[in-house]
Image (cartoon, helix red, strand yellow):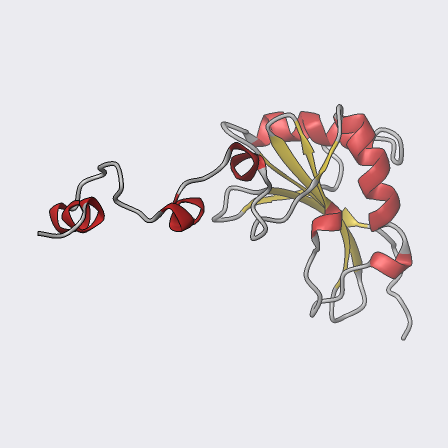
Length: 158
C-alpha cells in the first residue's frame, strides 16, 4: 500500500497530505495574491464625481496628440470609473476628416436618460450643455451608451 499522498490522489479527495508540501503554494492562494489586480484586466482611473472625471478625460481627449484615428482604438487612458459607472471620452477623426467628440457610459441598470444626466455633469467644465442639442445617441451590444457630436464645424485639412 502507498503513502497517504498516494491514497489521497487515488481517491480524488481533499485529504491531508494530498499535495506535496512544496506544491501547496501553487494550489492554494495566499491572502496577498487574492487582492492583487488581475493582470489581464486593464486598470482604469477612478474619480469621485462625473465633474472630476470630465475634467481629466476631456483634457486628454481634446489634446490633438490623443485624437483617435479610424485605425486606432481607444486605450485605458480614455477610461474612468465613477462609482459603478464607467465613462470613456475620445475625439474621433473619420476617414473624411470630420471630428466628433464621443462620450460613452456603461453601468448596471444605466438608462439613456440617466446617462444623459451624467453627460451634462461630465461636460460641465468644458462645454455649455444645451438639452436637446446635436448629441447623437447609440447603444452597442456591450451595453455602452455612446453620445457623440461634431467637434469642429470644418473638416480637417490633410
